[in-house]
Amino acid sequence: MNVTIAGHTRYYRSVAFDARKNEVVLIDQRLLPHRFKLLRTRDYRQTAAAIRDMAVRGAPAIAATAAYGLAQAARAFRGTSLSRFEAHMARAFDTLRSARPTAVDPLNALTEVMRASDAGHTVAERQALALAAAEEFAQKSVEDCRAIGRHGLPLIQDGMRILTHCNAGWLACVDIGTATAPLYAAHAAGIRFHVYCSETRPRCQGASLTAWELAHQGISHQVIADNAAGYLMQQGAIDLVIVGSDRVIARTGEVTNKIGTYTKAVLANRHRIPFYVAVPLSTLDWELESARQITIEQRDEAEVLGAWGIEWDPVRARPKRGARHVYVRVANPASTALNPAFDVTPPELVTGIITPRGIFRPTELWQRRSELGPGHE
Ligand code: MRU
Image (tube, rainbow, N blue to C red; front, top):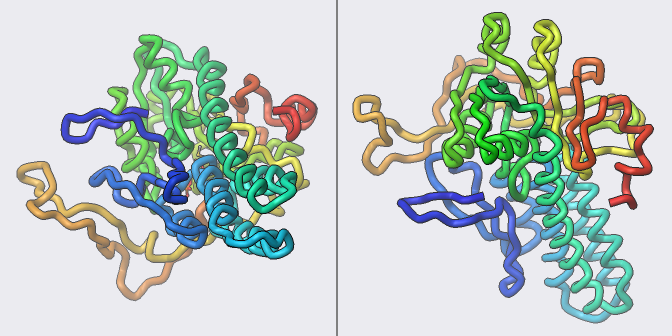
């Protein structure tokens, strides 16, 4: 999407690859919205660290990053021995896959790159095939998001107030986003609507990233505290909820997404507000029997006990001169915290899954596996 910094507008993808330098190029999302800075990773270990430390985050974005990281590993290999190349690729695959455990997209992306590379007869062929497959994954991710926008557009009507949680926007994907794709399509079509960005403690992806994205696109929005959603629904101030997902179990229709999604789904159900989940095909998990098998990432307690932000001048309503990006401790110094990063929403609370092939009930996904599953893309 276009980003305007100091009056200059440029098109960026959240994840790209510099083939000449063999570097993955990322927007460092830890610094947004206060600073826009690109981060270049020089080898696959640095790429895995960028995923682990959440310089890049969001299921499709970490998938594209992992795909490029595996291609980067392939291209860094020196020698002609296929068995040594395979051992090197297996190490890179495991390092990139284990950087974050909950989303299925990175596993799907890495599997695609590995499978494509394996078809080569020489190391050089496998290196070229790995990069081509990573580029294809990233491009397909963009096309999926565009198609989600087309299918989701009819859900957005003039005057609607829409709640979203976390960031399932272009920063979380390679471009466009999943939950935001229908919003961007509706904005382009001249439909007027207002978005509530749920703050999304502890890392505040809604307040920092979704709000930044929507502001850049000129979309009317406000940040709300996570706890405010129930009140607003009770007041009749929310007409629709759209979120993304890190893993949808295709057999059951269970939706894994950022912690707090389940709470919003329960509230939406209580208030009979449609609750939609937007996903590219890479987010569908065709293997697991149930969400009980998913590893829910447990993150550092420091995220809950404090918060990151920029030093702020409240009088001038702008950053202090020479402001630093700082961590402040909020919680009682003697207390510890628990920090599960994701939760699971059962299918009966989900009105529909917006996919690049249309909108389906969660329980319909498995019946449609011949059209939505791997090998039919
Ligand atoms: O921990 P994060 O920021 O990676 O979590 C991101 C989310 O939960 C998103 O909603 C999800 O990845 C979908 S992104 C299209």
